[in-house]
Image 1 (tube, rainbow, N blue to C red):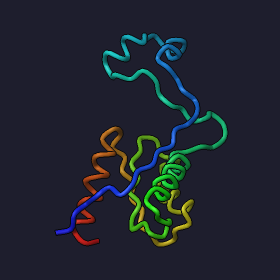
Image 2: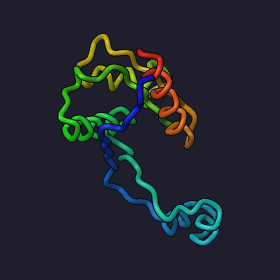
Image 3: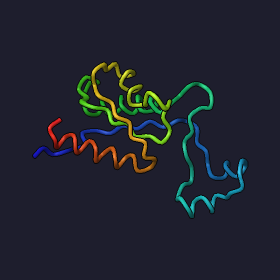
Image 4: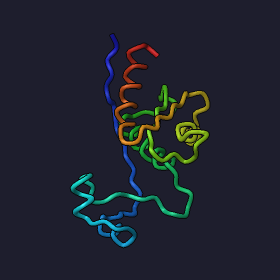
Length: 133
């Protein structure tokens, strides 16, 4: 049976950091309340203007992962794109990333399972690899 391995990873974060303290200016909450319930201290936000979407962040992360693996975009067999906040409802961000990577026939699948999308994406990739796809 085929084995699944993670050859490389990449990530890209927007520059803007929004702290819990900053959120208290917009809503009734506190840093303590947020941290107790979520463990979150800060998050990254894309610019409000400028048209940056999930596929743009994914493109930058993909470039990093490809470089680390020593691959070219053409080496990708399938795109599995998990996000809570897609660029558009249709087409999905996976299709947009496919286009930005210059791939015309590489399948793209979007998973919209919020925080658990990462795990669904891993399980889906593992199933495709083990099936011999």
